[in-house]
Amino acid sequence: MEIKFTVPTDWSSVSLKKYLELKQDLDTYEDNEVAQIAVLFHHLTTFPVEYLQGLDIDTFTQVRDDILGFFNNTEHELQKIITIDGVEYGFEPNLSKMAYGAYVDISKYDEIRVDKNWAEIMSILYRPIVKKRLNQYEIQPYKGEINGERFLNVGMDVHFGAVFFFNRLSMDLLKDTLKSLTETTVLPHNLKSILTENGNPTLPFINSPEEIFSNLMK
Image (cartoon, rainbow, N blue to C red; front, side):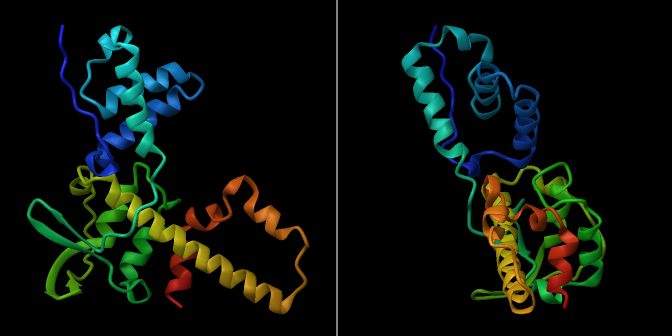
């Protein structure tokens, strides 16, 4: 039997909705590598999973390698302008001058990460463009309307771009904080190793929207 199926080559082909479903299943089978590979095939390809065991090893290896080739590459640039259903949306042009209501609504979420709340955060940060000239644009004033549904079908390249924007922002805040501390107090000699342990020096900042935005609003 001949089976034709598609395989994504990058995150732009994977929607936020599909990613959240994928992540939930991967977490469920986190201790079962075989099951996780099946989950990747199920969510990221159109291949019928019931035929997976009968797939020849060369094709299986090729598809698996193609998926894993982009799966861990989640660092993307922020896309300031995106189009959804024919409407252009612009990322908040100036976070330091963001409407207080938007700041409050984002800060109510416990973490800034791609989870069940992420689509709502994106609907606050990306709003319809009302005026555009060259690389400059103006977006619709924030009215407290949060509708994450429209962002569920947006590719993960856009979502990861926003996440890593905050990642880089957090790094800058962290560097400024450390610089300020070194000017006023003596730091432990092993501070750098403490912060970089497990390769996650920015998690406290990434996961605290109030920390990020309170600094921006100053």
